[in-house]
Amino acid sequence: MTRRQQYVAGAKAGAPVIFGFLPVAIAFAIAAAQAGMPAGETIGMSAFVFAGASQMMAVSMLMQGAGAGTIIFATFILNLRHLMMSTCIFHRMKGGPLPARLLVAFGITDESFALFMTQPEQHNSIWFFFGLISVTWSSWVGGTAIGAAVSGLLPPLLAASLGIALYAMFVVLLVPHVQHNRKLGLLAIATGLCNLLLSQLIAPSWALIVSTLVCAAIGAFWIEPNPTEEEPT
Image 1 (cartoon, rainbow, N blue to C red):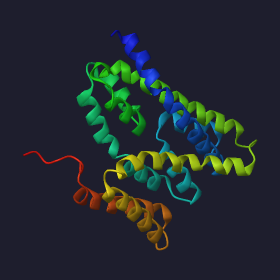
Image 2: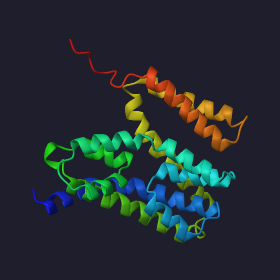
Image 3: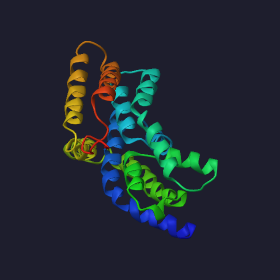
Image 4: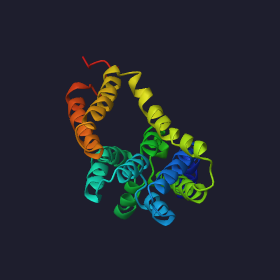
């Protein structure tokens, strides 16, 4: 396949993500407006950070009065998984100069990772991934712009309901894995309970960081990577 064909195929593969990204991006923009962020900063954050969960967490921490250093550190911890995802993608990806690969790394999200890693071998191209992230990035930034534009026009009940989209996205990402690994589900519940308990004792922003680090460390030793697969004989 030519580069153009690979790019178009990637864009088509990423099209369904639009329906998930738009409501979450709008909810983020509304939450950012409620936290006092100007529309330009909100759109710029989506364009240059491009990490939905981290952006929502940052806005939440901002509303709680957390400092910039705490927010940056929490974002770093939350996004450590991207190191492994980037390694897996680059190992599978064929071709592409280093600058292009660095640009690709910026566009990696949970959704683009899952889509790319499940494609047939003929689509293991950097141009396919460029098509994929062109759609995901533009839908995220576009949704943020829409949310920033309408944040003051939506009824409060509707604005609040859009925030449910973020939790729905987390559930969609978690449930398929929990079905094959009950320990992962227990760990997710334990992390939430740990955060709830610690938030009563220390600042909520630090409670999130500590609970994430502690439970991730427990999971690294307790959870099997592929519990459904048989051990080789």
